[in-house]
Image 1 (cartoon, rainbow, N blue to C red):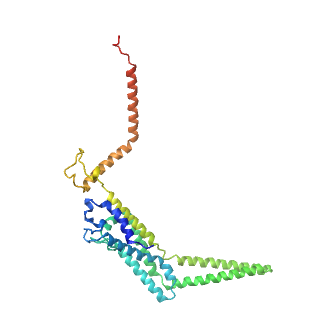
Image 2 (tube, rainbow, N blue to C red):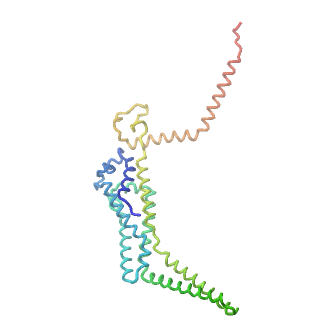
Image 3 (spheres, rainbow, N blue to C red):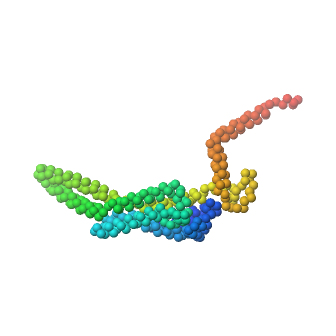
Length: 312
């Protein structure tokens, strides 16, 4: 999978639209519509997505570390590839952890840092950096001997399997019970050797297991969700996105479409409280309504049956 800058731009542009017109995010300026931000770095979404796509694509090569190192035929070749992969790990770690007043990871706009404060994004970043740190440590610890051991075990496996097949053939044609029993014992012994060989190979092969695509995809999805959530927080109530005073009439800034985050939060809290009260007391309200209808019905019946004492 190669990460496409245009695809990233399209996804984030659609989500970023929910932040436009919000006073809190006024410094986004034209960032989501093809222009520059006003957060201090004059970033554009297009350039940032190109940076992210390039950085993510470089990290993809870390997925092939194991297979590439196993191909090495000399210590010098192994050391050169190893140093290159360690450098890539270090670059990726620096990129993920980069953060200044106007920049976020990999040097993109600090908008991404703001969204990075979301606990889910932080969690994904932490998992990503932990995996990269472990991968770097594993690379630094292993040397060319690892490749040599794997190759030697593979050769031994082929030799053991060959011996087992030869003894199986001999045992099938052997008429002497003693010799046949001896051959079967040799097969059993070689089977144990093969099992030990495969276990050792598995242990040595179980290194440099890193799936960058999963980590990158998880990070992208968490940031997308964080941007979406930031645009949906404290949305103003009422038609046209305008504020209303408690009496229902428009206040003095009714012509201003930019909501006040503090007023929105207070109004949202009040509305949520009302919703919670109605939700919690829904059953009681229904029962009260039913009881009222029954009382009204019985009272009406009583009125119809009561005689008219003035009718002579």
